Length: 306
Image 1 (tube, rainbow, N blue to C red):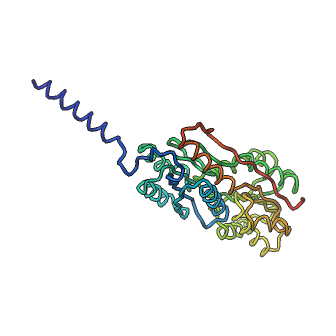
Image 2 (cartoon, rainbow, N blue to C red; image 1 turned 90 degrees about the horizontal axis):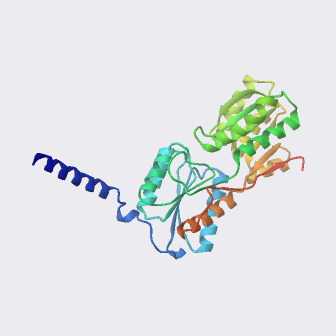
Image 3 (tube, rainbow, N blue to C red; image 1 turned 135 degrees about the vertical axis):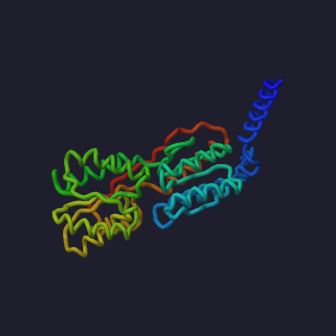
């Protein structure tokens, strides 16, 4: 008799566990395929960077064209805030999430939460380390880092002393751009300084000041984004030194600086196109169509030579 009760109790617990896996009503995505009923949740790492402002505008423009609603949240480069933001978006009943991660590892928690309640996730510009992501819409950051290194070698010669300003630690773009750069630079250049400036212009200025003081022989700098590159230029100009700077993104300020001969080059992305392709992918996912696991967006090296 006792064994029977144990079996019944175990069965009851199993049923309760199965029920707990069901998503709450607010989190269940709409079954409607009418695009005008679709709500997109967009979580951006920071809107204090022109690149991500353009990415957001690309999303909003394409969504408006298709008649879809977009709710935008700004993580302000805070991974904990971004996780809370994504949870808030899910509570608002979004049908799909477009996430530009602040930290590729930390965002995995939010991606898995969305997976658990059946809300599809697409990542933009940066990947998520864990959880199911329908597709990643991004440039080839590794290739971009190689392009930057190749240009530096061409301009200052092999074995020249160079510095590297890294992006936010933990961001996939930081790792990938650094990897591409080192694929070339470790063989052909002398990397005498490497430090994070968190993709931030002011931090790029401050870090570059310290780098110049400790490494007076620096001939070139690769910054993982244009904001840090523009900050580095300010520090270099104040020092009176002649140092080549190469950035990454191709934002308006950087393109202008290249044309004026202040910035040596920038590996230009297309943030508006990234946003546009992410929305098109969201539409396909919601309509049950197959999408590629990664959607590449072309890069272009913009230099003062051209």
